[in-house]
Length: 431
Ligand code: HSE
Image 1 (cartoon, rainbow, N blue to C red):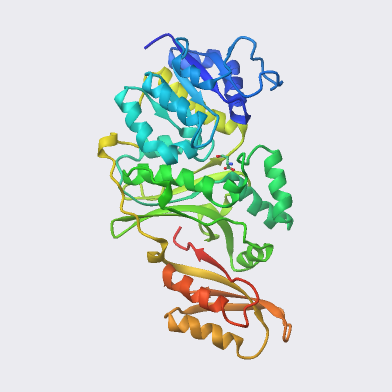
Image 2: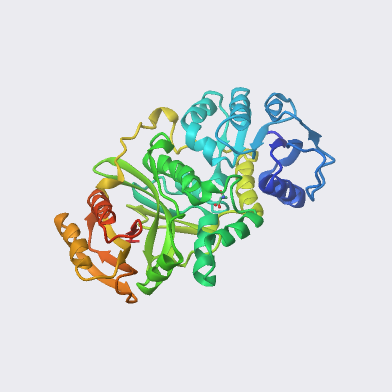
């Protein structure tokens, strides 16, 4: 093991600055812990003149980050640029090809190109680590890729996007509107460069792809994730859920059904008895259903400068100690091309919020559709009374196949008495 590990840090946004701060603050501690000095050789960002609140004067400045991959004074490229294509992809690929290890927080890159990059890292005998890409400060990749390797995993449920969780929590506790709360999340540095990725499920989908790959030993396949975001949820849904004893959480879920892998991101009703219920604000959590350890549960800060930088440093420390773990928990040649199954085959209970005209016979036509699909109603609540006008009606169903439920809801939405698209949310009672 060399006595110094030299970093090239590409990207000095929220996380990059956090990494520099930790290296500067904990240099001596890191050396004691690893037996190796962790030093920054050079940094790169778009604007060299901007004051980032940290002293960068001792480091080389690189205009084109891809050239870091060719520098003799860089052992590890720390890629914090983001984005699945372009500079980040070129940099990581070049670094691995040139025999440099890579530490990245780039979930989009890993979700889209993880299989190819893992192969490249193996072929060149270097590390490719991405703890910070999933669930911010929670060491979930390490847990999944190392500690849980003795388990067969049946399913995994995660609150994987801090911004969405923050929005849902703030809407509930403050009765505040969606757009207002999103602005707060952006100001706090939680949101993605494109915040649409946070609220439409894409960001959580990237992270879920990586967890599913490790859980089931399959090549990461983001295209097989069904994405549903939180944009269509009303404050009323959050309030109805609470009255029923649930909270709405944007969950990334992967599970096996008859040997096929199902991957989805969707808002779900989570019961009070679930550990996920209490995960609020920017916190993330992962609940794993395993055969040996049963249901380990992890939680912590899912976004923000220092929690994410903490995860980057964990990966750097592994490299400083000479530790390299297979990227997705096994050699690339053993990763399978998964057979993916659609959500339609998943059975669960559902919450259905309708906005319908308050007149005789409306319930009969709605329940007739559900009856035709063999869907049984557990309870029904009508909010207010407004003869001839629209009212919210909320139904809870017994277990039904998602495919049947979705078709039934489409038919209910097409009825003349429906004045708005119905809102269908899965209820996750077994967590
Ligand atoms: N925008 C992400 C989130 C940051 O809100 O969770 C961490 O990946």
